[in-house]
Length: 494
Image 1 (tube, helix red, strand yellow):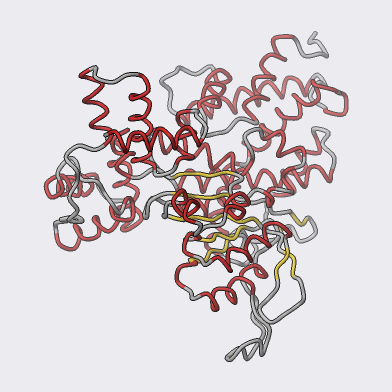
Image 2: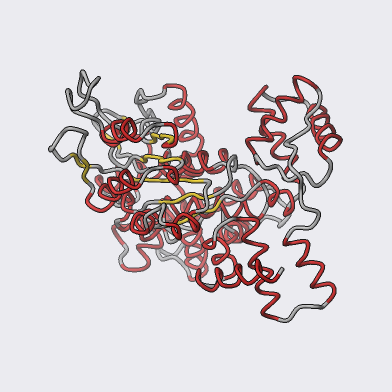
């Protein structure tokens, strides 16, 4: 006769599953946990491991349900929480394909809200495990959010280099925090308070990173209408701040009242008015805006209110701000062109996107991956010989050490030019014969540096590659002021 209680061995298995349920899917910890749960061989593919994980969990839960152990109403304390996470993991993975189809359908439909035919099945399975009706509806919305975040981060920011793996993990944390238990406990409804600043050279993919965050926000589920309250395509709106004059920009951001200036023949709803609850506004090229506009943006971030041009009626903003620039904020802050108070309101997290030359240096296979993805976007699935031909022309015309000043955006245009003309000469910029990293390698080999000089040269090399003191500080685990000191020492001494 089977025991009506879970054994210690079963609880150990369940606790491992519970840790996996809340682990970052782009992190090594989740990979290790999945391997342990699945019992698969280490060289198994990701799909094989996930299939084994889902199968083993389903079998374990069925055994526990047969014995009445998996009902959350019969558990309390830590064991109830562990079982709850296992049940959530199980139900979520049973409907992955349904969520993916919903995402693809919503992309086709645009702003039109799609009905969710599988919703009642998911809600029924959740309540069958003992999860309350109201909690089940919120969990279902989080399921959709989790899958959207994975879908857009994975497909929008491809690459196998260490820098890109780190970036994907970082973006996931921006959506769900580094410990999703905090998110699930209450921050799911408060992520609008966490503004994000994206830094990096032109063409590195800041827009794609912003879109991944913006399309991954929480959207409540409306049971009566059997649909989510908003299309995720409306949850993300963007503006390039550099393309507007100051007067026009204020109207575009905050709206204006009829008659507030010459040409204002009607009331105009600005970007902040049109942003959906839990939505994201992407302010691209924020380094280009004037100080007066910076002050008004600061008010929105501090007080969550704004005023349309010509109006004294306060409007409330309930969305999230993601901002980006390819300028050196360090220099702008020091010169006073960018306000310190605005920077500190924007930098709940600062993410520096890696330049293409760094990605290629870390992993030469990165070029093949990017060529495959970009060619597929341009012309659908193509035989491998086309990718090989493009790569051969790039190597012939650019050589092995081309710096890719335009980054991934330039690579995409290079592919198009090769398709049209059969060649690509690149940007005619002289590449230094030996950069900071090259000098560092040479002097290490020669043994000519002391410890302080070595740290200074290393910080300078990282700064040359990533462009911000914050990113160098994150990688070296030094504080920003120390990094700045060593970078300046390296500049003066090398």
